[in-house]
Image (cartoon, rainbow, N blue to C red; front, side, top):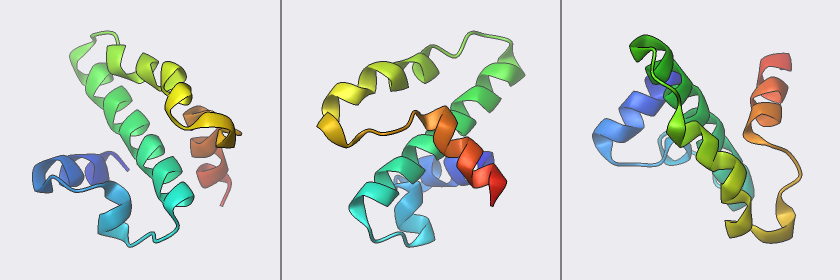
Length: 81
């Protein structure tokens, strides 16, 4: 997923668009998960705190009542598959 994060950043596209996810809510959740993994990897490489990863918790206010899981929980569901 970190590679997909870098690819999306370089091509200025959403990761879900590159993969072809059409459902808007699933695409949003997937984009969050990719951003979370990519940001964590970058922060681990530089040994700096992942300030942007903390923003996902406050990002809930933008999606209203549809949020049912955190990005960390979503990543865990992807790992289980």
